[in-house]
Image (cartoon, rainbow, N blue to C red; front, side, top):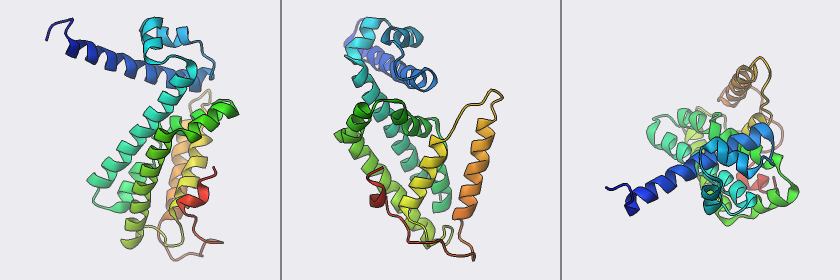
Length: 213
């Protein structure tokens, strides 16, 4: 393959796109939604022209960041479902605090209502979310059938709990946020384990119960 071959150019373009998306996601979370596009290009180590060839404006970049991280979360959940023998282990692995999951949940809270509405209405994002819910729902049912997950919770309960947990993540000066997150997640998982304790109030929430969120 020569330096100027179409295959090499396509590989370079894909690599630049990945660098831009990863850099933009971190920049939005750490520095806010209005980091200059030029600064994102500089941090990614690409030219401004390269950034704009991939993403013509900030809204296009934001949408791509959300799609990319949500798709990575879906891949992670599918891998867990395929690789783990026990559904409980696959569920824990799928719902744990990966970088992609944290970003997906936190990014929409950073932007204006108009951008959030566009994210929620985007057909590709909606498709990925539906597929992710299908995977999680399947793991919930499998875990309940194997007796590891309490029977009085639903897929909506799990999604809601972990959404609240990861949206609340904050970085503290002494880096105790990771420890706090790990402990809070352990408490939630312990509460989701099947046991002989009291039943939860109300009814199990399904994924459709949370569609308005």
